[in-house]
Length: 256
Image (cartoon, rainbow, N blue to C red; front, side, top):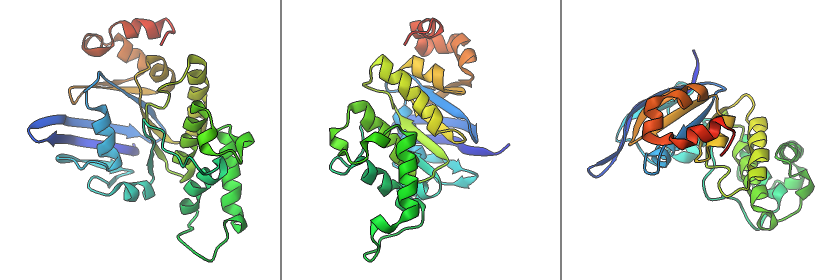
């Protein structure tokens, strides 16, 4: 089987505190995985290790079979992995179109150049228009990012995240701060724009996790407690005792 992402005995310690304790995980290409766990479980640290913001204390991370642990975040991005953050990360004084085009240019082979006019880059502009339509911002072409609603800003960030053509996408709490109706629309948006891609998402909203993921990885105290389908995780007694509790019952009833 071809794995898009593999974690092999991954460990991370800060001083004497071991935050990630030997996680092994193999994610097939095209699978959507939700990462859940209580506060302080190590979820954000795990994301930082995968995306290159932290270097592992030991173990390794493989992207499409190639070791990426120890590489810089921009190097990992160019190899096909892109990440969004909990805090919206956009260019507030650029328009929607300009934000997305920034993400597109490098993927199409355009580097820093002083003699090219951006308006003349037909392929980049066409790809940007396609992205705007995908993230439902095609009617906001010239609107400054700072003037978008919060949900629209998050949608723009998703667009920027996928603009480079990465086949592995990491989303860090993508629906945080959204209303239920916004969350519902955003789950559909994420599904639509990540078709054919491998997706990892950290989420506290159980409705989002169980509605979006093919598999769920449960991280508790830096260890992988379970990795299985949503139904199997719901029924896992160890998971319920360690973390989910009433949230499992809520998700089974369709609540958040």
